[in-house]
Image 1: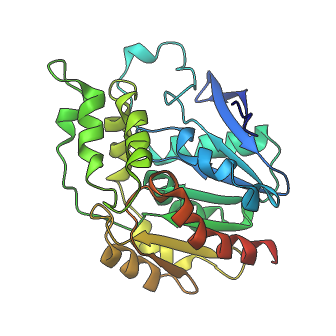
Image 2: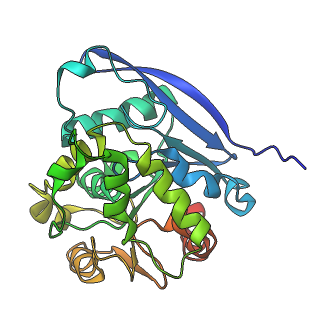
Image 3: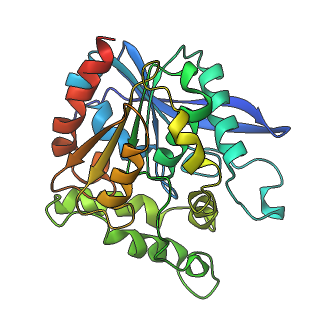
Length: 281
C-alpha cells in the first residue's frame, strides 16, 4: 500500500553576505503562513508530522526550511575554507531572505531551541513583521551542560555524538519510533554544523534587556515548555515569560525538547488551541 504525502519541496535562491545560497524548503496546506524553524544541527524533517496534519494544513500554509549547511540546503561556494559559526545577524538575515523570497506577508513564526531563541530576538526587533510568534524550548539564557569540543573531532563519529548529546532531552513517554526518527537527522548532520549552531545558542547579549520591550499586543507571543527538557528548563522559561508583558507560557506535560518530532500527536493537542487563537486575530 502506498500513500502520497501532501508535502512539496523546492529550492529558493537567495544571497547572504554576498554569497549565493540554495535554500531548501518544504510546505503543505493553505491559509495563514506558518514559518517553522528547526533546532540546531537538524532540518525541516522535524516538522513533517505537522505538515501531514489536516487539522493544521486546512487553515495554515506550513513552511519549513533548512538553514544554510543544514539538510538539503546547498553549502555556499568556499564553505570548506572557514569554520561555520551561526551569528544573530546571519540568522535574522536568512529568515528575512526566505520571507522575502516566498513573499510571506506577516506570517506566524514558530521555532524550537535555537529556532525558539531567534523568535525572542525577532519579537524584540521585528515584531511588526509577524502575525504571531511561538517559541518552543527557548529562554533568555540557559546553563550549558555539554562540551562542544566533542561535536567536531576527527577521532569520533560527529553525528552519533550529536545524537547522543540530545537523546536524553526527549521524554521517555514519547513513542520510541518518533524519538529515534528525531535522532536520525542529528546523526546525518554535516561536520561541525551542530557545534556552529550552539555558538549562537550560547549568545544572549541584549535579550535580558530587550524582552521587556516586546509588544505582545501587536504580535502575540506564546512560549511552550516541556517538563522533560533539562536543556531549557521550565524554570528558565517561566522567568523569561514573566519578564515579557503579555507573553503566555504553555506548560506541556510528558514532552521534551523536540515536541513537534518526538511526540507530534501530543504536541498537536497543545498547538491547535494556539493556532485557533492566532487565526481569529
